[in-house]
Amino acid sequence: RPFVAADAIAVSQVALEAWRFTYQAIYEEAVIASFVQTHYAPVHLAALVSQMQSGHMFFHVALHQEQVVGYCHLGFTPRGAELFRLYLRPLYIGCGIGWALLQQGEAFVLAHGLDGYFCFVHHQNEVGKRFYLRRGFRHVAAQDREEEEYMEKSFAEEKPGPDSCERESEL
Image 1 (cartoon, rainbow, N blue to C red):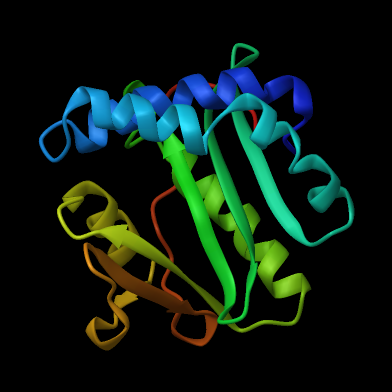
Image 2 (image 1 turned 120 degrees about the horizontal axis):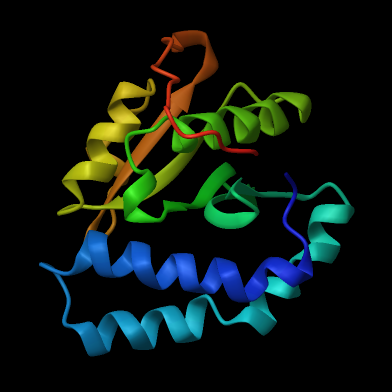
């Protein structure tokens, strides 16, 4: 479902859990905590609602038993549509929730008349890179940034992906 300001604290908590899980071997705990506190501060997340309501941004959350377990955030940049964030609580990785959120984000991109989008993935985030490759993204090394790999997806090259989970979750 669409993100609402009341979700901001829960999304920030999911971000911290996901970052600890994803980047624990890359960054020290203090670096992770500081980054999440700065970039996923509830007040900053809540401020995104107006952009969503105006149709300039996509930000959905996934719920399990009324608790936020993941989120997907896309928007527009000078390069085109960009996936800014897609994170899940570690317990829910591999259940199809990320794929379902991504599909909803892709519908948003398509509704804006675009034929693809892109994201940046930390070069040591193997779980993330595998996820995107399985979902039809390709790595374009010429567009890489310092520690991040540029990955893009063209809907013309789309391949179906798995979408299953034993847990009942609501998007």
